[in-house]
Image (cartoon, rainbow, N blue to C red):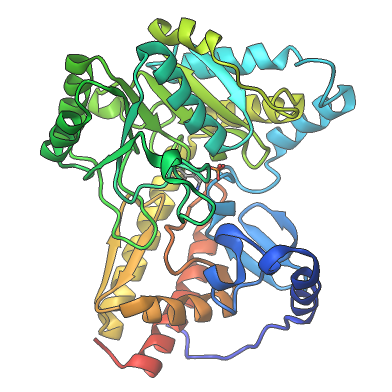
Length: 417
Ligand code: PMP
């Protein structure tokens, strides 16, 4: 292990941009990148990115373990994706209508994801989850949607994290169950009294600020049976986990198929694209709803998506992320033991979750992340991290040097646990 070193990173350009932003952007920044959502030491503005590395506006280099909160699955500027992007950009992007690659992207997704017979495209994960709800309601002529309490499905009024700007009516048709607890779903179904259009679920529980929890296959199977029994649509929110656990649908290995799935993030390796995939029986309802967007037919992200999804399988991205994620998890476990700190690592190794014992208000996590960022690795104190297929053994060695410093910072502020 390396000794504790302190190398202070210059943040003058970032500080100047933050100050200018405060004058012209509400709160200086909003959502999950707002100043109060990030540790103070976290750079807010970035200059460039390459492979598993990013550089902030002050020129500081980092190993990127957030992958832009998921989209960057093959690494920044993956050559095959960039080649496809350049070729499509030379032809056109936002045109009078979509390019031929829209059909090719739909064919590829339908080929890769077992439950899917059709695809529709949009921009963000919220577009995709919201469209799924509309398709389910159009298909069933029912109103209510059951979601796991605390799960994030986007920032539209039906699902956004905070209630500011949201009316009770926006949530009137939402009801909640507990992830992995089928009895709680049954209870919510009973209360909904025959009016359940859909049940939405994530591949595993990845709520920010909580331990992650893999799905109990029995829960998944019973959820499927329950939806069939009551005639509700099973919606899988693949936005965050999609293509990191499996190069098809995330529940394919356990043999449970949703009726609809919402995708975004990793499907374009950073280029803006979302997709709704569905079974044949919902194709008519999907063609009846009116959803669109000025940029939903952009050709460049679709070309990027074809190259990304192809490379995910051809280059073995999932096993690569599993291997490197396992190395990271084992290294952190060794370090925590050596440092005498109790930590809990949860969720799939490709999407690491780390929590400190007795960590009220995430004080230890914040101190840890501040130090890790200071030592050249982008991580987050409350949100899961993301491994990409571009992380090398050397990158993980650098990450482990930084996490060791992070553990020392926790001990010096809070003592060993
Ligand atoms: N669902 C899940 C599971 C997500 O993680 C996210 C984004 N973090 C969304 C939906 C919303 O996606 P977007 O931010 O692209 O609208």
